[in-house]
Every structure is written in structure tokens, then in C-alpha cells.
Image 1 (cartoon, rainbow, N blue to C red):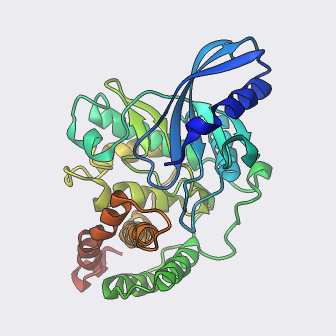
Image 2: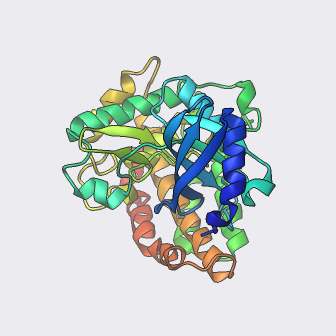
Amino acid sequence: MSDLESHRESLQAWLAGVSSADKVKITSMNPLTGGSIQENWRIECDFKGGSYPGPQRFVLRSDAPSSIAASLSRREEFNVLLAANAVGVDVPEPLWLCEDTAVTGRPFYIMQLIEGIALGPKVVKDQSLGGDREALGRKLGGELAKIHSIHPPVAELDFLDVPDNHPAINTITLLRRHLDEINEVRPVLEWGLRWAELNIPDTPDITLVHQDFRTGNYLVDSDGLKGILDWEFATWGDPMSDIGWFCAECWRFSHPELEAGGVSSRKAFYEGYRAGPGARINESAVFFWEVIAHIRWAVIALQQAHRHLSGTQRSLELALTGRLLPDLELPILNMTSPGNWSTM
């Protein structure tokens, strides 16, 4: 974790400039846990004058010491957050972007702080969180439908490549390349990728996809959903890929019987999604993307472990993430066994 404290004065001056405040005093700054790819800091400030007078609570999101290949830059992620906010998705309000590394040493952006719990295993296990769970599932489905209401082209998102063929083909190619770069021999992942090549679903409508929409990347409190987090993988793609990722067994934690992220029935989640304008669900495509979800999470886990093993970012959490592979490979084998081919 970087020492943001050493940049307190320059950060205060920058905040005063972007908010037109006479003076800004940072009263506390603390790292937030749970961000395994980027760094997040809770910043409490006192503004004198300007557009945000008085005490304020923000999140500063910056680059980590190392990253993985698929993640967006902070500028790109900030623009995606602006686009999602514009169509009414429940997200922390994005405020200011800074690409001047003289301020904190890394690019970062500031967004409003939303209070709540995001840790996936806790959200699934603690029934006091999220309010009525079927209502939470419907709400999450509705939020995802809003995300998928964004279609290319969008000028502010011109850094995202519109797929020139089926997004599944691009995903398979990218996952295979990342696996080769890590130089890991994983026969089950190779089997899964070959199965995917032979079972590509119908060509979809292309929309904005979050690509990490799952339990663990949204905030809840005792009343319900507070906001959708972590947009660093967003791209143009098949909207069914987000549904498959959310419903994949690997993100249900201690409640595998609750197929919608371990928090609700798949039926409730689908109801919320289908209530969105023009939102449709291709169930065979969702099944395909659930298989891909386990392969993709396995490749990301290997990438995370490599960050530790390479010495770039020593972290017990990153090292332990690499130990998830057997738990991800078993569902791949179960879902792609010949007895399940009839589901496609």
C-alpha cells in the first residue's frame, strides 16, 4: 500500500483547486480493504468555500503498484463511471480525475463515499445485509439492465474497442494469450477453452458490459443496495456475459443454491433484468458465459498469484488467490461434461 500521507499537502492543494475552495484540510485518510487490483482510500476533508463547502467524505482510487493486463486506466475507468451515472446506475458519484503524478505519485480519481458492506462472503452469509433478498436480486437485475442500455458509439468511451467479431471469440483468444503469458500448464483450462470454441452462442447485441458484476463488487446496508463498484474491466461486449458472471457458482460463496450471486433466486434476478427497456435473456448464452466465468476467474487468479511470485507486489492475499484453481476447475469439468452438452 502506498504512503498517501506523504502527499497530504499536495493533495489538499489540488482538491482546493478543482473545487474552487479557499482552503481544504484533510482530516483523515485511511486505506480501504477489499480492492485486490486497485488501491482505494477513504478521505475525510473540511472545505472552506468552493463547490463542496463543509465536511466531505470521498474515496480516492489510484493505480496499485502492479496491475493485470485487462484492467482500464484510471482515466478510462472514470469515464465509464460517468457514463453509468448518466443513465441512472447506482454508482458513487464521480467527481474529479487527476493524471498529474506530481500530486500523489500516481493517477487517481475522486468519487463520493458510499457507506456499506461489499465483502462477498459477508454479504452472502449475513442475512441482516441487503434487506429482502429477492428484492435485492430484482434490484441488481435492474441495475445491470441499465448498464446494458448503453450502446456504442459513445464519444466519451472511444477508448473501448467495439468487437469486430463475436465477443466470445475475442474473450477465448485473450484468455488463451494470458494463460500462455503466465506459462502455466493447466489442462482443465485448455479443455474449457476448447469446449468454448465449439459452443459459441448466437451473435448478440453489443452493449456496455461491466465484466465484474458480482457479489463483492456492490455495496449493501441493512436496507438494500447502495452502489455498484469496480468498473476497471468494463468494455463493449455480450450483455449475457455479465449475467453469466453474476450467476456463476464461483461467486455464490456459502449459498450455492442461490443462483443469483448467492443472494437471491435466479428467477428474481431475471425478473429485475427483464423489466429494463428492451432487456432480453438468452439462457443458452448465459450458460456458455457461466463456463467462461470460471475459466476467466481462474486465469485472473493465476495473474494475481504471478504478481506476488514475480516479486512485483508481495502479498499473502495475492498468493492465496492463486490457490483457488482446483475449486474453479471442478465446475468447468462438471459443466462441460458430455452429459451437460444437451443444455446448449
